[in-house]
Image 1 (cartoon, rainbow, N blue to C red):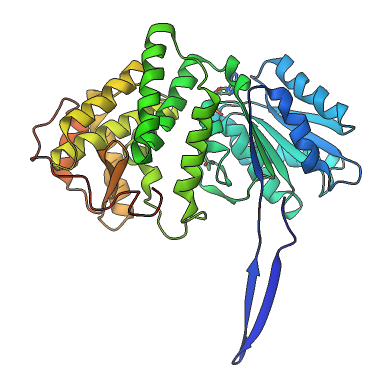
Image 2: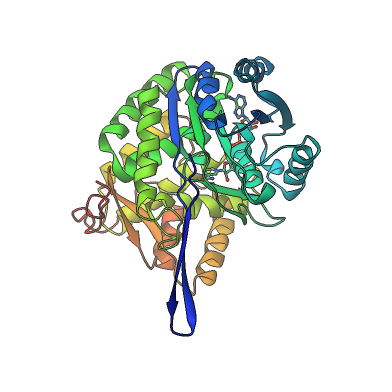
Length: 398
Ligand SMILES: NC(=O)c1ccc[n+]([C@@H]2O[C@H](COP(=O)([O-])OP(=O)(O)OC[C@H]3O[C@@H](n4cnc5c(N)ncnc54)[C@H](O)[C@@H]3O)[C@@H](O)[C@H]2O)c1
């Protein structure tokens, strides 16, 4: 629950030193069934005098699902209305936010009412952005319905819209007052979206959790035989806890913009940008980005070829791509060159050293990067050295 915050000041010569703090505490509830959401929301509504909820829903969700949540909210005695939006990336625009603001204004939404976002990462980002900006900030809860949103998008309080030219350019930090991770919301998620989420789960496992990686490998074997299914609740929870651990040292991204969570994202983002954000699902691009990072790590002698192979085989079993297609290599290198230019000639990348340990390379050599992007087969590389001097455990996240 959000508290009132604190503001203090003291005289400092001919100026005043002002100190403002704001706490945003909240719960992340894990449940097998979405039916658990309304009772959890009851607490979030307790502050409201005449409880009222506006559902911001992905219109691709099964109708029955949304009605189930709505019926649960009505049973709490809350008034409940709904705005439906497309859950596709194109909805993460100012025009959609303006439509939701207008709905809230027309319907007499008050500052202690609750906005509830139910949908994938797009709807979670949109709900957070609307909540951060309407009436200078209203409470909101999230019921993420895609694997990416459950283990990543709904966690961390980052809210954003896309500009006409760039993803996530317009936004800020505004934590929800509640997140309910209900496994059965994933039942209707298409297999390709589940696989995309598996890439993000794999990312945090490679960064910090060898045992989780082994569990994901077992799940990958099952997926290969039977097709993708939602991840078990303890795995979802492990991924969320890992993400929280990785955010803990710098929750507002003020210190380090190149932290471990960017593993796979530098090249993944370049690939998404080079293909107009329409060819790859986000997790697919991250899978390719992790592969390129592993190629680079082997080239630099920082990762054993067998570790790279283990990662690639797992990704492939989950139906994820593990190479930049030859026709996109030049465009990806071009996009990476632009990132390098923006950062004053330096390109940083997070590389895997072993399963459970990564390192941040501050200055990636252009030729080594070209080889890592262009050649997905096992590169010769330098002799593998022991894992990086800088690992998560040493950074205090162990
Ligand atoms: N804020 C953050 O920290 C953060 C982190 C990761 C991703 N994101 C953002 O999240 C977005 C990607 O999220 P995503 O991969 O969930 O994409 P998404 O929200 O576009 O969902 C993918 C597709 O699945 C559909 N869908 C979602 N849940 C469904 C369900 N249960 N049943 C049927 N269809 C369903 C959606 O309508 C959409 O078509 C990007 O915009 C990304 O920038 C934000």
